[in-house]
Length: 227
DNA sequence: GCGACAG
DNA sequence: ATCTTGTCGC
Image (cartoon, rainbow, N blue to C red):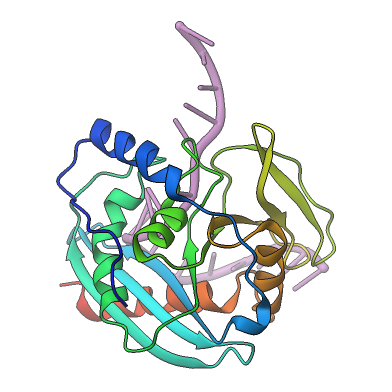
């Protein structure tokens, strides 16, 4: 995969915030028909407290079969602290390397984290979508920004996440007796599409296959290279 | 000012 | 997110 916008990572938190405000203007909400999707990339990162390293994992699965096609992993040094709202500047550099190494061209990026449900409407899912000019959406396990109510306990039940006057995503119950997930628009997708895609990538687990497999792969990388 | 706060 | 084993409950 190729970057559409180059990126500097030697930024202070203030500069990072300014960059988010600027790039957030480039986000486009658009329809992404399910029939146009053949490959989905799942993206996640794990850390080692011991070696202070980070393990970025990207998997590519076919759609709608959800069969694993490719994996790319990057081990890197932590270059930025964890600050809520600035996750991209901690994980982005390694994730970009992994995405650039991809041999398959995904039609959609599914990112562990938020998209528009972000203090400046520009979470890591939106950021990756914009700099690669690729449809993207966020799949988070906790809320970050926006007004929301909890959905019912039936799988598939959902409620909107509202920022200002705009709906930017869903709180989605993927599995009974499990905490809901937070699905948000990243880039070049819309509310309806993001819900449909996530629903069709669910199997028997709380998380959709792309991010679930990426999460497992990043843990695999850590156990293999944490020394 | 206070509380909340992705991974 | 990470450190860490067993254990309770659907």
